[in-house]
Each structure stands twice: as C-alpha cells, then as structure tokens.
Image (cartoon, rainbow, N blue to C red; front, side, top):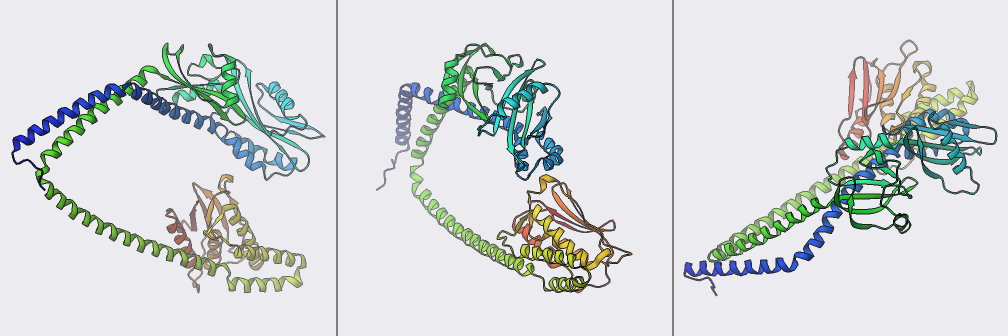
Length: 526
C-alpha cells in the first residue's frame, strides 16, 4: 500500500506540522531534563578533568622511583656484602635514573661495621632516619618513606631494605628535592585546566602550583577530613573557594599511593570551566535535536523515492556481503600461510639445534685433551654438556634472553678455543646491563660466531678476534675479516632463520655484512 501523498503541497504541510511538533517536544523535554542533565554533566566533566590530571601526576611521581624499582630487581642477584660493594656504583647510577632525583644512596649494616654512602647535605638526618626506621626488630616492612627539611627545602626520602646471605642489611634509596621537582612540573606539557595539590597525612604540602606552599600546612583543612580520606580510601567531591586562584573550584580529593607513602591528592577545577563545558553540551543537545527534526522532514520529503532507495540499499548490502566474504577468505588464507611459515620456522630451529659436525669436532678435541690435560678435559666435558643442554632446551617462541645467549656464547667460545688454541683471541663482551633482560632470536649470537669461524682463516699468525657489544638498541657481533678461499656451507641458512624470526615478529633493523675490514651482525633487541 502506498502512503505517499500525491499532492506535493500536502507533503510540505505535513512536514511543517511534524517539524513544529518535534520542536515543541524538544523545548518541553529540555526544561524538564535541564536540572538532571546539569547534574550528570557536572559529574562527568569533573571526572574527566580529575582523571586526566591524576593520571599525569601519578605518571610523574612514578618516574621518580622507577630507578629504585630497577635497583630492587638488581639486588635480587646479590649474595653478600662484598658483591654489593662491587656493584654499588652501578646501583647508585640506576637509582638516579630520573633526572629529577637529587641523589641515590645506600647503607650497609652488619655486626662488624656500618657503611653509609649518603648525600652530605642532610646526612645526619638521613642516617638517623635509617637507624630509627629500619633497625627495629621484627619489622616486616621492607620499604619506607619520609619527608625531611634541609636548607629551606623539603626532601622526599624513599628507601628499601634487603637482607643478604651473610646477615648484612642493605638499604638503598633516593631523595627528591620537592621544590625543584615542582619547578619541573611547571614545564611539563599538560593540557589540563585543573591543578593538583599533594599533601601528607597531616596536611603539609608536598606539591603545590605555588612553590611557596611546599612544606607548609594547607589552610582550611581539618585533620578529621584527612583521616577520613586516608583510613577509608575515600573519594570526596565538593565545591570550595581556592585561595590560590581566588575563585570557586570543584575539588576532588582522594588517596595518592606512591612507593611506601599514602598521601592525599586534591584536584581543583575552576567552576567556570565546568560551567562552560556544560553550556557547550546543552548547545550541542539543542543542535542535535534540531538536526534530528530536519532529518525526519527530509526523510518524509523523499518517501516517494523509497522503493528506489530500498533497491539500491539491497544491492549495496549484497555487494558488501560478497566483499566481506572475499576479505574473510583472503584473511583465512593469509592466516593459514602464516601458521605454516611459523611451523616451518619452529622445525628449522629444532633441526639447527644439534650440529653433528660440531659434536664430532668437539669429540676430537676432547680425545686430544684427555692425555695432555686431564683437568682441562673435565672442564671441556662440563662446558660441552652445558652447550648441548642449552641447545636441547625448549624455546617455543623462538626467543631467548640476552644474558642467556651471552652465557651460551661464552661456553661455545671455550670449546672453539680448545679446538683452535691461539688461533682465536679472547672474546670481548661489552653489553649494557639494561640490555641483559631483553630478548634475541634463539642461537643468534652463536650463529654469528659459528659463521665467523667457518668463513675465516684461523692461525697463530692471523688469529680470529670476535667482539660482542651494545650499539643503540642492538647487539652487534663483530669479527676481523680474513676470508677462506672456499667453504662448503655458505652459512646463510642460520642468518635466514634469524631473518625469518624478525620478519615473523614484524621487527626491522637486522644487518649483516662486511664493513671496513670487519664482518658485522647487528641484531635488534626485542
């Protein structure tokens, strides 16, 4: 049945009537929902400003103690006081990872002596705090923080405690000059109109846009208010008058957990900013309402073409359905191809794990060692077993840690050194400590060493020199170039395997080739 009016004038009149009806309904609903909309919009806008500002503040404070977190991980591998002293300088550099950290420091306590390496400014206060807080008996808390005043500046101290195997208590920590940190925060690119105030549990300012407030108690805050926030982990929203801006602000107060500290964060948003946002939302609501009415009128004006639109829509849907089926089929084909390549890659890794020629050469070297040097022969057997244990370990994703690869390379070089003697110079390893926890394709360093031995002449007069070092975000294996005239295996299979891993992971930057009398293999870290 066709419901389209035959007279176009009737259609126009009907459209005008519908327009006026919808306009009247929109005005009526706007008045009824105005109060409710303002309340919801107010809370929503305030939450957006609060979350944005709180996220930025949390990010900046977390960066301050990122070095302490990294140093804590390094401490897990330290067993006694001597080992700690040897690594103390590196630990201190890690503690000062963030430029805003004033100082990194440490202290050692054992029954024989006490060692402090703390800043000269405020040293007495820091030592007293460490003795008072960390030498208590039966105190399970391993991380603590404090605020101290020194030379008209407020400092934040954060420390962690560790017990070593020789009963030495080690304390590592850092300090932050909060006035200088506040100046840094002024220059941080933050598009938020709101500002944040950080307080301790007694109401003293730790961070405030007016640097003169730092270290002083924020006026107008009661202790009961702060206790309610901290003890109940509460969130309080209220409207207050800001003495800093001289304007009413919408304040969101919450607990700010950072390190071992439970502070209070106040995020103040000027009230007029929220009002402007709400007015903008209201205008958008009216515009959307009017636009909706115009759409309805336009749809009614074009009802006479409905059957044409339905036909075109049906054809378009059918074409889209076919296109979607085709894309899904192509995606399925690509997925199957990728899975097949991955399976072949894993198979290649397994085939390359055990090299019979290497085993036969190692057995020959061992046979020569048994009569000549029994102790060295036993060490050779141990190294060989470690090499094959590593080769037979399961790495389902084809990746291994840099530290593991370096350790395996050292074992592998030892076996080669026994075989070739003075024809191989000691291997040089200069890898940054932060690179040790990164990943590389399994056996990548060993493949580079094996190719160096396979393609170059080795003799006492022309020994082979291999070095491994960090360069940018890569591990680079370099050897001097003294090519053989002929080799049975080009060695490209190993590098092709590594290239396949990087291609599968969609990582670029793999490099290998001759450069200024050397052969270099550069492996991007993962």
